[in-house]
Length: 271
Ligand code: ADP
Ligand code: MG
Image 1: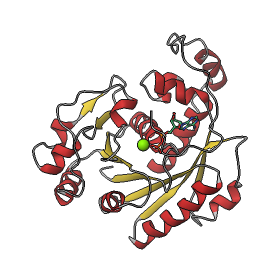
Image 2: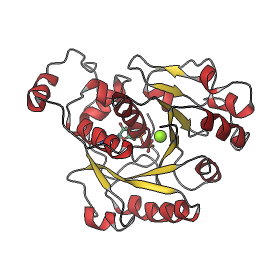
Image 3: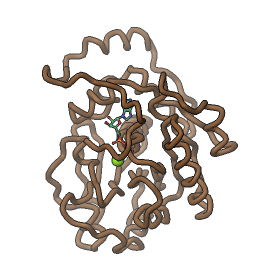
Image 4: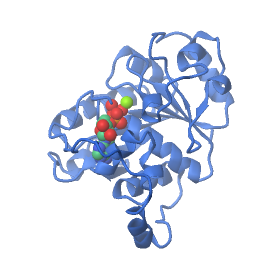
């Protein structure tokens, strides 16, 4: 595929990093090579979500020109390749044209996990993207910031793939129909609120690895199929697999705190 897909949101904490990693796994299962790049240079957490704390090099080194994409790539046990950002240094704005060239040269699909909002960092990374996927939660602050984001993305003439409405369920403040009007003519996908998402974060693995037949996992696969342009099909014996998923051996630690839904839809919460 060899294209750069930005995972963007107006507001923080809506699920970009979670979606970036699960989409990577789903797209990979559709036979495409994928690299997830941490574009949240000021507040990176892509590596933390996979339990990767030590890196041979980071995207900051790539931006500075002291590493290439291959040498900065870390591969997780699930097969997902990521390029993390440095937890300790800030080199935003440096060498973006070099990064663009490196992205152009790779055959892999690059999934760029953005910083939230419309700051300088996000806008400069937008220049690197061929397409953008907009993530929102079904609440008023999140959708309001999505409107502003869509205007900016469109003013940069970037193709919007669609909107992912993440964490749907009982906390809907704005209907799907109203959210769809934010990006007219573009698909909207729903990912339900699913406590397995946070359990998978505890286990430092994407949901598609932890509970591949959970409700949210099916949502991630559907978005991936839409992005790649293939028809979404549920795996065979889906109900049976869902049932067997309940008995998968990997469990969350005993002392995992009680999981509660965030009533405010989350704001810049990072693990
Ligand atoms: P962002 O990258 O936009 O800041 P994250 O991917 O870090 O957002 O997600 C923020 C929090 O929301 C994390 O604790 C994550 O586990 C949780 N989360 C994301 N999507 C879901 C979901 N569909 N169901 C339940 N929790 C979710
Ligand atoms: Mg994030």
